[in-house]
Amino acid sequence: MTGQAFFVLTALADGPRHGYGIVGEVAELSQGRVKLKIGGLYGVLDRLTAEGLIEPDREEAHGGRLRRYYRLTRDGRRALAEEAELRAATARVVRTRLGLAGGEAAG
Amino acid sequence: MSGDLDLEQRYRWVLRLLPGYYRDKWEEDMVAAFLDSWMTGDPDEDSVTMEYDRPTRQEIASVVALAARLYLGGAGTPRRYFAWGQAVRLAVLAVVLVHATQGLAGLTLLTWRRHLAGWFPALPASLAGPVPGGAWPAVMNAVDCVWIVIFVALVLGHHQTARVVAALAVGVDLVFLLQAQFAGLLLRPLGAWSSWFLFDFALVLAMAAFHRDAPPAARRPWLLALPGYFLLVPVPVLVIQATGNQAWLPDSAGLGCLVVAVACLAHAPRALSRSRSGPAAGSGVWSLALTLLAAAAGVWRIVSLGSYVHDPHLIHVGLAELLILLAAVALVVPDAARAQTAAPAPPLYPRPG
View (cartoon, rainbow over the protein chains, first blue to last red):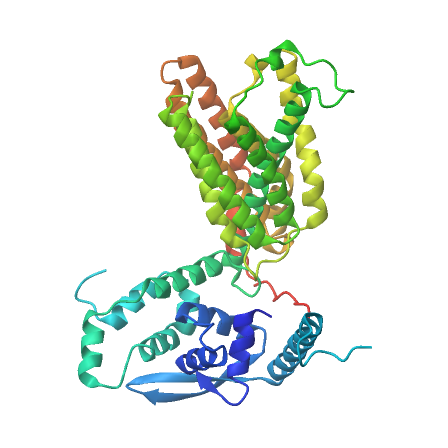
């Protein structure tokens, strides 16, 4: 799973969001490190939809335009949880090797 | 882009870069998200923004990158775009394979010239010549060998590494060409520049087809193709040169035409049998890839003929090579055309994890 896909799925973990809502949430989650452009965002959304990890939720009118919201599917929630676990385990190993707090207990 | 357009229309104009099927599905959504990213809620400010602002270069670049990924389709894209994507990937691999075998041939010649392998026979006079000194020959030898690394990286799926190293190699080639051009050392500048443009610069751009959704290359056949092609083409060429029969060899553009023509002839039975048994019998992407390679080889041949305007004999030879190429590619073109219209869309490829 790419970093962008991971952040997009995380942005949808606590509820449906529309396109620009996802951009803002990803920027916040990544503390400004990941700034999705619209072309990049819809590349990711298209791929995640095709893989069955997200799906359209609803449409809402806003400023004379329709905003389409997306939500995680059950597969998406499971994939995100597995990826988060994998990343957390990797982070624990790194912290242990660097001798930082929060690493795996020695022995 | 007309100055009368507002921000929304300007963005829609950029989105026209995307394939129609994708715009049908996502355009309204993309426009809404794009405008959301610009609007502040203040009617005056938003009105000025709509009238005078334009999509940023990064925004346009993201749409261009998306368009490249969609047109050079991978898993999950419609048949037509998948066929083009596969054909470009095969053509890129074939051209990188040729570069890599040239690197092997250069390495062989260097080993021979410098007596680095005791079991090699004595270097024939036709290949001896002066051993070039200075930095450039060494750099160019190294760049030729780097293509072996690029080929292996591409086949093994290290696409980003292959792209970056290829861009560096092509950049060094460009510097070498410019230096040779200004020093008046290029014997056939039209051939050299068209070769760089078609098989170096365009090649690196075409490597965009190796994106995340691209199915992996068939490793074993492609890795076996490296020694196979080396033994079939560069080694016989070296033998012909070593035996003093260079006069029988076509120039590089002519050799390119003949190699692609032979590949078309070898593939023709499959392409023709597919046309008899219907579109379900295969994808036809190899026919499309060979057509692309034939087009590139043909353009190279035509442009490089400009260097022979004072030698009617070489012009006739070049035209004969073109004719052979055209006759051979005509056998696979109908199958290539069918590759784009065959009905079934490819499935999504399973991803690990």
